[in-house]
Length: 332
Image (tube, rainbow, N blue to C red):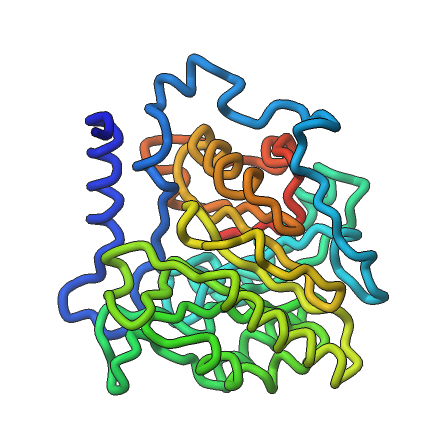
């Protein structure tokens, strides 16, 4: 049996993520760490060691991960990416759409400065992270429970990125579709040297299920298919390596993670995508990113959801205390 506090938090989480009745457009973006598997808050508060992994030793550390030497033009590990996430068609899905473009880009500038000052050893690469395939609470004409953004919208956000010498990520929420069906439409953009890919397993329902009613899952086999496609684009178009961001905030969102292939043409980031108070975010990072090493790590900050209940927003200096230090920082 789960502790009553955990059950209440889990119930509140599920209620928060269900789309509104009759909704057939972009659903509000949500996320919470896996409250059903985290210990009660009081136990974490009493044990400061639970808030972050112990310093590594040569015998038990999972990090650093053995990776191929970076190819020329690689962004990682020589830079830290700071990205603004969302969709301009919705103010509720993230900071990218919550503000007018000029205000949003000015705020991105401030975050880039903050991170540059917090870690003077690491150059910062600004980025915009656009949800280009958006999960839906209704099936749509083809029954796939997802909405594809048109090329004009992607071009518009790409233009915003160019104003700041930023890179662009195209994020995919599958619904009942597949990567094999969705990625070919994005290839004309992914052929550009400054456009990269994100995959959100939370909304991957397989052949059954409705996004928002349960947490979805993607297997390493599917991630490897995306890696193959990106690697082929790099070779065929003489591009610098691509960055692939995979979101995660529970164990089962990403299955068989050890089978993900690491190769120099594609740099893989596992991004801790949970919202909540700082203690919960640190614990989720430890449980679902630190314990399952792939290559590089990321960490998401939610401007609104992380402040629920009056909790403070985690600042760069705090996030830099995580082990391993995230090289991809996403703001929603």
